[in-house]
Every structure is written in structure tokens, then in C-alpha cells.
Image 1 (cartoon, one colour):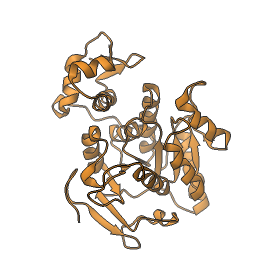
Image 2 (cartoon, rainbow, N blue to C red):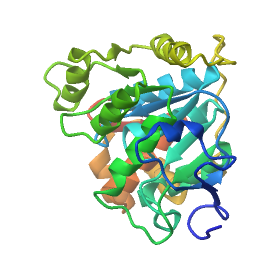
Image 3 (cartoon, one colour):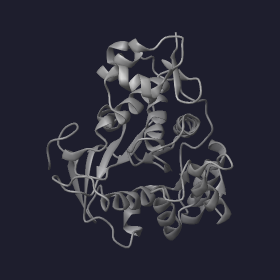
Image 4 (cartoon, helix red, strand yellow):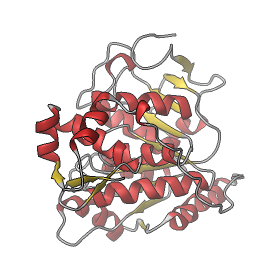
Length: 305
């Protein structure tokens, strides 16, 4: 058992012991040990991955897709990073669903720090997972290690918004190597952050426009592996929990107090709130998901209600 970081002690699952996810054994180099905080939910998982620099439209799409998927009984898995990963986790949580975040560090070096509150909520709804021991900080080599776990856990991998150099393409490549169905969401022509997705589509990835397309991928995986996937009958999207201002973080409260009916650019929000860019982006995204702020385009935000 370890300690420190988010939440309580982590449970360590040795390879081949009960509780160790069998899907990881398909990797050529499965983790010897898996550290888990929370509880890995049972059921089919869908990986939603993409750029840290995702635009508001891509983030909103990811949130909605994630919420729709958990409404169909799926579990959303991603890498806990800013951008698309954060939107994927937030969307699942907003619909009262389960989500799993695979971390590219030891639990005592949670990254990014701006997602500390998000990680606590992920742990409460599902699980935080890492193969890295305490004392391991995030580094260039740790994220590909994380990505292979994301790909192996999933019954389908969907790349939402990714440039040619995005780490999400590593996840896509590993998914292909493992035979995990792969989908990609098309972006705007000329958008450099969509070129990775467009390349995947040219190479045969399935076109994903909505949750139905993802369900088709998951069912393809189930058919190939002769799996039963209970809970995939279409259902209404669960209503999001009402958000109390008492449960907002300090950064979220500061930003909400700054905003009014006149659009304010995110750089000005950061400057007036005295926050860094990453912390500001994460807080604004949380407020968007809660329905408390709205993007008017060009990263200009207004307060809602």
C-alpha cells in the first residue's frame, strides 16, 4: 500500500492476481504492478483522448459525447491531462457516470496540479490508476507508458481532437496493434489540431459523430472477443447534479465573481484572477460543464444566470 497525493492509500494489484485488469495482459509489456485509488468499475470502457490544446468546441463535443456514453452504461477512460482528457472525465461526472483516469506519474506527483479537484472526483466515481511507483514525477517517458494502459483497458478508442504530433496518436497506434476498434472525430479543414484525426480517418479509423458511432465500435469489439456487454441499451442522458456554489474551488469562485454578461477573454480572466493559464483553463472548463459560464467564441466567457 502507498500513501500521499490524492485521496487515501492506493491498492496495489500484482500481475496475475485477482483485481488486476485482464485486458492489460494483451500488452507485450503489461505492468507488473498497478496502483489503484478508488475502484475500477466493471463493464466496457471507451477511451476518449486528444489534444491538451483543444478548442472550446472540441471540449464541449467531448463532454457531451462522454455524458451520452455513460448514459448507455459505458465507462469513460482517459489520461487526466488538460484539454480533451479533462473534458472526457468532466462529461462522465456531469452525467453521474463512472470514469477512470490513468496517470502518468506516481500518486504523490499528480499531474497536472490544476486537475487536483477533478482527480478527487474521479476517484470517488471510479478510479485513478498508475503503474508508476511513488516518487515518480511526470516525464517525457511516462506518458507513452500511461497511453498504452489507456488503450489496453478500452473496448474502443476515440481520438477527438489531435494534431500530427499529439500524444493521443500513440494511444491510437497501440489500440491498432492490440486490435482495439479505433474511431476519430473529424475537425475543421485547415485546423492543425485536427490533422492527426484526419490522418487516422484516411488510414481507416471509423468516423465518429455521436455516441451511436461509438456504440457500434464497442459492439464490434464485443463480437470479436465474444463478450457480453450488459447495460448498452439506449437510455436518456441522466440529468446533471445541481451545482452548489459552496462546492466550487477557490479558483472557480474567483473567476465566477469576475464574470458578468459582457464577454471576457480567458487571458484577462487569468490576469484579473491572479491564476496561471493551466489553472484558469481547468477552472473555466469546470464552470462550463456546471452550466455557470458560457463560451461566446474566441475564448471569451460570460457568466450564466
